[in-house]
Image (cartoon, rainbow, N blue to C red):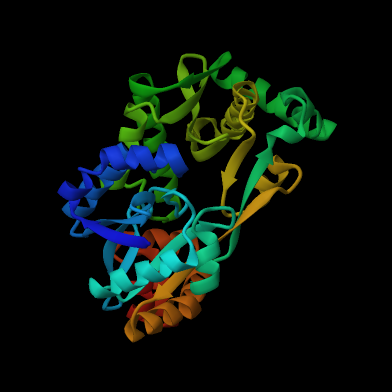
Length: 386
């Protein structure tokens, strides 16, 4: 008989290490952020920020088969269960066997007993272990996107991939490379891990925060706060892959990536703004792709959204569909899920229409740009939803 257990609080979650490793080894380890050490640190981070972390343990015939890490939040007065690692992780994932519709029913009942109104899972991959159950019993939140990827196995080598671009594109790359060397000096590329990567990561974070500030865009991760600190821990531990492009004696561009099975996830890219005229980020990215070919990866995951420049890199247009799903547990939760589904896309559309000047002004006067956009279309309710 199948059963579910809810393990709550950082101390209890901290005791799950042996079980976590056993389920991962026997049924699948999940995504790059599902390592137990990261989950344990995220549970402590959530608690410090006033959220209650929990792990749903699913068992079959007495043996644990699936683990799903969540935390509680408040949304328009409702108690919501969201992925523990959101917004650090780019996808909602689990450890172990895929979630079955019956297991989701058990989860609904268990969360409802604990006073939750709705289960909200963001960025669920169509090829992931959560999708089948959620697409059957959950409610799409109208946030469908495509996470494009480069199918590395579609090319015999990096040289073949590079040759798939037009002669004009390759010529432009050579010219930008020459321009970069003229500006800053000879180019070199290196993949770093652990302590050797921390200085490059810190530099990339300073560039990223500067880029965001100039555009009036806020980030829940790249804000020198607790999630950025946890991201830094993944670098220090060697979980992250940090590729660096150096021009002369200085860093020109940095990319933070993660191994996700046989896929490489391009999580974050940043470059020295003083060298923007030479597009160092593109050169860094090209060399990282070459490294991925050498390392034997099958995919280079470009993540969502499917921007035009990513389509050019993907070549074949390969991608995975992702979406947000809500599972209502109470009438209140059903109302919140429907409100979010209809209103949030409108708020985001207005937000993206705002000029950088308006966004920056909003941040300066203590009103995040998204809140200003929400107020323009439906007042404080939308601001809370976002």
